[in-house]
Image 1 (tube, rainbow, N blue to C red):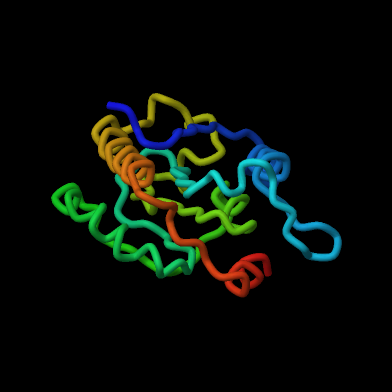
Image 2: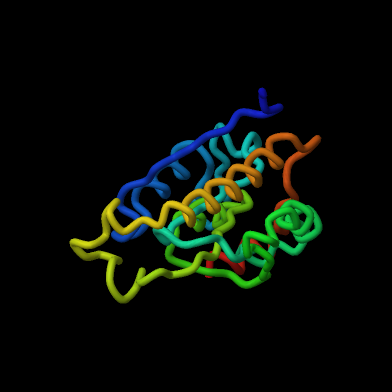
Length: 175
């Protein structure tokens, strides 16, 4: 199967130190704000439809943060529907911080974070010597990979790009 659009998969470094990898990429290729607060679009700005982020280790996907982009609700609801038996049922307009989707969402490219079961993420494995492959739950990872792939595929097959937030919403996201 060949998607209608190019798919990019990225693995970032420096997320915990301030989104260093994704911010550097976004600044060079997607866009950034100049000293006067004006958006300077990069060469890929108008090519990217969406950015999806899966960041919390093992754990099934249960929901998606829409980052205030209510215009994607209808599409995302239909895309999530086939996975309700796998426990993924919720969309929330809420924003979440601290993950690499912010580097894209902050410059106006729709960026989304999947909400996962935390499976001892904060209490045991996160930033410890136990944060390794041995603590993955294979069935959870399969579920998350399937849902992420479905969202990426659906996005690539669209006639147009996913709706972007208004300029005012972008300004609010930067605060």
